[in-house]
Length: 488
Image 1: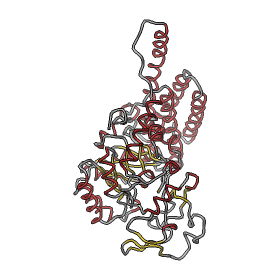
Image 2: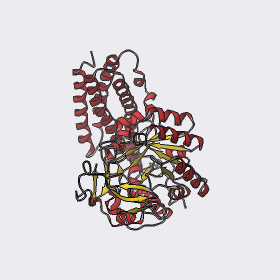
Image 3: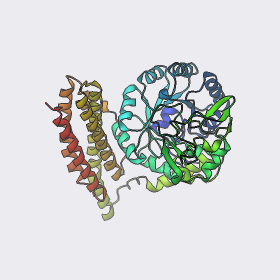
Image 4: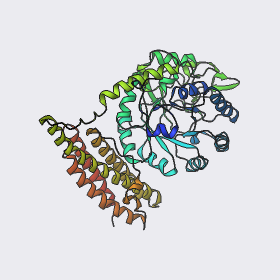
């Protein structure tokens, strides 16, 4: 691929060993060896979707990927949806097979993250909130994926991708990828411009020749529209309670097949001798027969932009080409070299104003990221339910404060600094009891609000008023935390 068509490699690309910041979501069932190998061979990074799969299948699929490409790839596991004994064996197998990376999803299982990391495996954790991103980072994840509510399949959080991405970018110091409704080059360019280190693609890669999805599912995606997708808990068998999925509407979501939670079990399909039950989380696969219309037809809100089933490399090449072109239009333009002209002097004056503002906002972001870590740690240590609830509310406000600073930097065409919380002394506020730490946090947070007001007042244009209003909400959360005795 020519340089003019290629996307720049990011820190996450270097961590995973891929060329392009395009990642195949580890979708259970459909992300098998053919698709994973095609994505990795193209230059992206593919994850095998192996949730609850038997060890023999995982071994076979890993070996098949390695037979098709020598490029790095990973395996997706979901602890919360997997029986404990099977999960332990899956982790053992990934370690024995020296899988380069493992992606985890849903609850953060610190023990699993620790075992994988100790074995030298790169751990990526998909999250639905900034609090979960902090939890994954604390457990040892090397990178996180911020999954917006627009995503197809199982959706953990309820925030749209753009505000969630800003909160996660502002709260953690590890590389962050973006997922949720991304289907074309403009989508990819948008999240990269917002600071994501990669775009995670799901629906767009189900509708490819190499996907293990049944053709009935692929054709529904081609015909589908974003307005036909919905979040539902109707497809729940085999997963923890209250696990919503985004699917295309069908007879199940319209209530035509009975009550998903009280109806008698009903077999609607077969996969090589395994019965497929109505209301299960199974989606139609090549290896299945049965009533595909009534199965979970996973689809993200980017389904509008899927108009054909094509080879994976063809779709990725088009996405990368479009993204690279669009990124050149929306990315910051390098400052011109100094010239002896009045125009240049004006540019120099503008730069003289912008550069220190960016630096001060970046330093403030590092401090606020450390503040988020202090709240996270304090919430985990306090036995007082009322105080823990107040800390949780303050943490949600703190992550929004971090997001606010990320947006301010973006308004200045600046990339947020990826330093972790440990880069600032406020992260070391773990001496003494919880209330002592929170007292220190509250004093520093109030000072940060005042500094942020002064810095944001220097911004020009529409974002300024909205960002300043966000500071009012953060001050109210700090007052509530103090009311619960945090600053005694």
